[in-house]
Image (cartoon, rainbow, N blue to C red; front, top):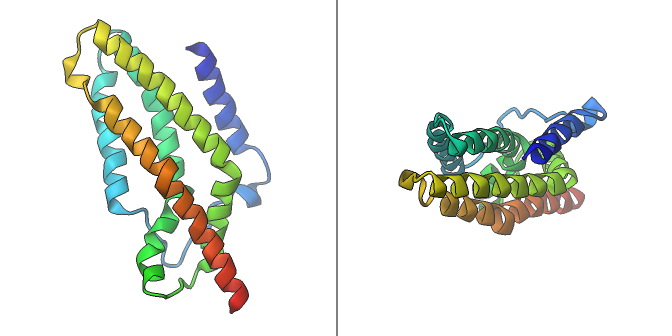
Length: 179
């Protein structure tokens, strides 16, 4: 368990290193927003997990470690990975956002960090497994299903949302060349 905590610290450190201009998240005049359904899912997952972190047993301990990783990961997703999805209705109408360059910067930041994001998914899966095993041993039936819902959310991100974000950036780059 300590190995994974060390990995988290290293990832957090590496994420903060580098040229600050390269890692800076661009600000929009009208910022594309993460679709509200995704924000609601993130909030619901963290709210349910927050309750479990108060357990005074191995389940609570695993939940606290899981919460730390998920909170950091969801913030990253909401800061620069998922906001480009907010322009999908505009693109579907055949229109282009005024801030295409900044949106492309977000998608490129994600492209550069996608391996780390996927590694965070694996860490979440590990801590989730530990929490669920402890919950089974310590008889916490109220937690049943949390793992399946979170795994389904991760599959949606990896299989649809993350690729869609990259496609948005690629599409905007192609359209930028056409203009």
